[in-house]
Length: 124
Image (tube, rainbow, N blue to C red; front, side, top):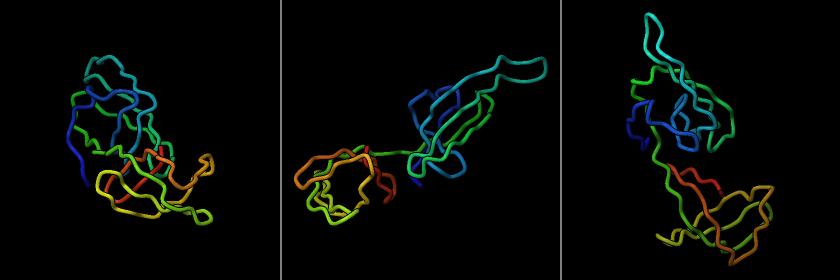
């Protein structure tokens, strides 16, 4: 997977983190003070980017954690066929098929923004 290492203390709400080998977007980040016998801990509440499942993680703030590299790209809808649409990446001109989300009104020639990580794509 395309990831990089980062310390837990450098994470922020709205950023991304790998939890259970899944890319997740951080919804809440809080820290607890160091105790008598330990270091400060961080609690992270996150939601899966591609599967929408909620996950949580508790780690020392000085621990290293993997952060996914997610690309935000522009695309153009080429055609719509039922629940699927043909999308062309405006950088590489590659075309691929995506399922149309329920909250998106897709018509040909519309430009969309999508997230991509290792072949997984999601409309923003």
